[in-house]
Length: 365
Image 1 (cartoon, helix red, strand yellow):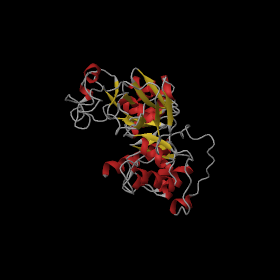
Image 2 (cartoon, one colour):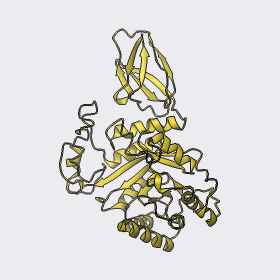
Image 3 (cartoon, helix red, strand yellow):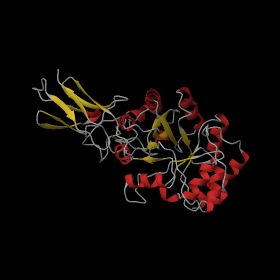
Image 4 (cartoon, helix red, strand yellow):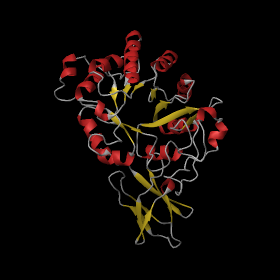
């Protein structure tokens, strides 16, 4: 608790001395109303189109932080993918959550003490959850691969810059090379590191997160002079805190994947919207778009004896969907694909749709 309190105090002091962030909404015309920070009355209305950030990608559909997980999240139309950035001993950046590789791969040791080539040789699917799946093996992505994916699809990145990163400014500089700064956010866990990012890239939108419920609205208003995005767990927010952040032109996207308030991710997402949140960090993009009634358009494609269900915007696969043809049901797998029977011919294939994806049909050649 004391470490968290010191972090809040330091952030407030740094914010009071800093130039206000420039990455605030262009049309922001909020007039601060401190009375609402004590009693908000009717909650603020957050962004109409909620910002969805996929926590480690679609980590229930593919191994977390892998390109498969990120593609699936993008297929469901998320605005940002959350990327845990680690740095190797030879200065390269990779996408992996844990500081040590033991729990999630076939290797051992700390990433910060491993070379880039050693990390890339690991199997990110060699763990209890994915070992027996079609995702075995999976590679830990380089940050460049993730940035290229995001640039090619117009997706932002929620950069969670881990303690192994000795060069946080380098992460922002790389994001700038790919044109991804404006629609992304940058989270570090020390005010000094955030200040270094701000000094090097004044327009980089910073994320403030991992605070506790005791922080008052007035402190959040002060912090929001220099931070654009606000994360942390949903129970740490109420309408008063959100009103204070909005008064400083900040965006609120709490974590809802734990189901802390309603015991479900979908329920917490809708609750967050009801108290004025602008979006949320989610774990299941398919559940989120279903809850928001925003199913993605789909297409069916046949290629080399397989049929694939993909999103109609990016062409990325949608796994675990039921297709029907010739009186049979087929379940899509990795890449949204499944094998066709030999006598497919001119049969019709169709996906009836569900809460997360719209229906589509395909006639055989």
